[in-house]
Image (cartoon, rainbow, N blue to C red; front, top):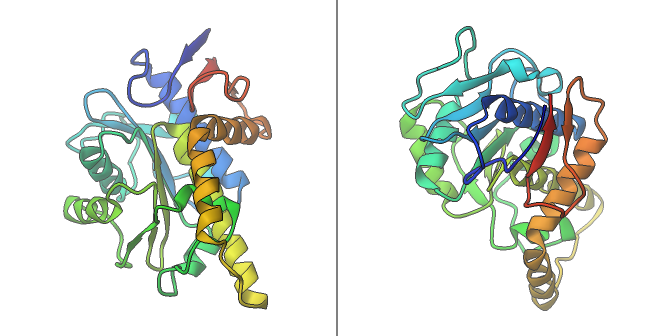
Length: 263
């Protein structure tokens, strides 16, 4: 069967299977990018009615299958027998509660991000083009504990504010998007931006781009943001050897994160 549907708020149907495929595919994309960390890290997508679909405890991002994506209600109750969501599902629920514009959340612990969060917040301007989508700022969550209960989830969501991304002290990164494609593409870009800056800092004192250049690039990138996110997602998915079929379609041919899912 082949269906065409957006992934995220406003999607055309209530297809649990397609949401499972999208989340599992995002996990595989992140693993291929080097964001795997043993069995940790998770991706979620908002469900109609306030719940979510999220990677369950057990497999690494590289080994996630659609059957290992759990449905969780808005109250945190697990609706998929036999699966246990990660403790930090509280983070996802709190972000969805606070941000009506968010349809998907990524939380990973890539080596570069974890390393960067051992230092004070990285500021001083925008250094690479991969940082431009985050020119308005990356939130800094200055608490090294797990975001594993509703109170901590709400604290994190307040810290995130309206940003696209956050770094969590001694922990990792979070990105959010309208849909799975955008949240995942932003995680790929943020990971690379952090790695580039750390590599530059290891050999010298990198120079930030001048504000006028950042403003021009930001205007151009924002004007084409949906297409850029769709293109990053499409290319990342195309590079995977998946045990299921998900066709992202031509880059820019449909809204960011839309997919033609075959099963």
